[in-house]
Length: 394
Ligand SMILES: *Cc1c(COP(=O)(O)O)cnc(C)c1O
Image (cartoon, rainbow, N blue to C red):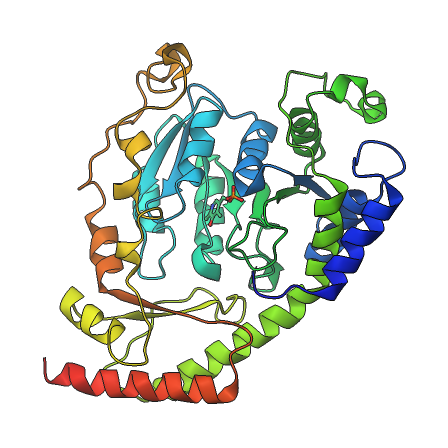
């Protein structure tokens, strides 16, 4: 949560005073307006707010694209586990792909892992770093894959001027506590494809068949779940969306200053970026020769860095349910046990992505807050310079 205040309080008060907290009644307009405003911000035809977070947005996108048993979906080795679990939720098998030194999906390994069963890829714009969408789109065309962008950590970012989430067939956003804009929990799926939107819409409301909108759909109603967003969530997100440009501008300015001033240090190397201007600015990534240097730098006085290899949730080696193939609550629904999936690539091991483990153990992340003042940033830069000097002695 970067910024929240009186505007959100007033918006929630407005909803409570209206006594309309349910989006489905024709009276409430907060979620509907948020969706319209989000579409306008991103420049895309359809968006669907969801109460189940980025995870539900990923699942709704997979449902929208008719992905299921018999399909492999490529996911990167460095992402929150929910990217892979969303694939299992629709009965398909996640195939884990290396990252490169941008900390996003490695398109060389991605091509190697494409099989006749591969139906889609989920590039994840981790920590607001844009993926190599140009190459991913080329490969998708070549091998007939669908693209679902995981934009959970990159709301508002872009790749060559196009907003992240609008480049692939669908995009999945999260608004949980830790994302760039937040309503505590919640998410949204976006797409420019009408059929994908209709299927996601049907899926996200178990009562779809009883809704007024069902008469306008081309797709026959099928059984879904309950991910409807509340008017309170919609009201908060409308205010958060107004803050987005300011948050991004401040994050980017701070990141640019840090990078400019550290670029003269010969011992400091930045991770690769596929789009410096589209990067969200939440994080500066530094790449060192080895883990020892990275650890020494990260723990130096005033640096407050950390190594992505140490996050329990975001590296594939920590995804127990995947590695041990416990893919469902019921054995007959476990995608790893389904007959349709028996020829698919589901051989996992902790050693399967050595390039990822090497890169993540040599990387240091510096996390930026948009409200850091100039003095804080000056001090951080000074601490990084000092830390770099100490490395020469190693
Ligand atoms: C946060 C996150 C998710 C899941 O979002 P929730 O809102 O917690 O469901 C998925 N992918 C990535 C990369 C995330 O960071």
